[in-house]
Length: 85
Picture (cartoon, helix red, strand yellow):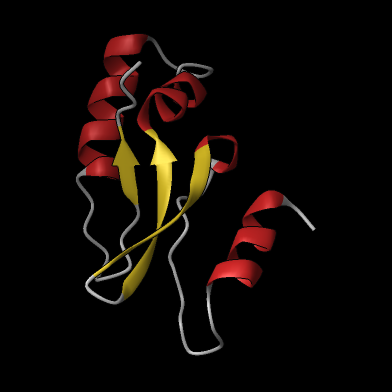
């Protein structure tokens, strides 16, 4: 069982679902809750690193901003966090 499947099994009941961001498994941080709803959380910097495997930084940022971070797919839309050191 991978870490995403384990997080889902450990943190969601049978009636809850979350949406996952395809292709960003390595950037998955966990599951958050707000207003009694659960959603997946990803590291934005790692998402950009993943995209930069196939495009330059500016292209990755534009693609991510519009197609990933800017895509609303319902209440279970994933969140993308910018970590502060």
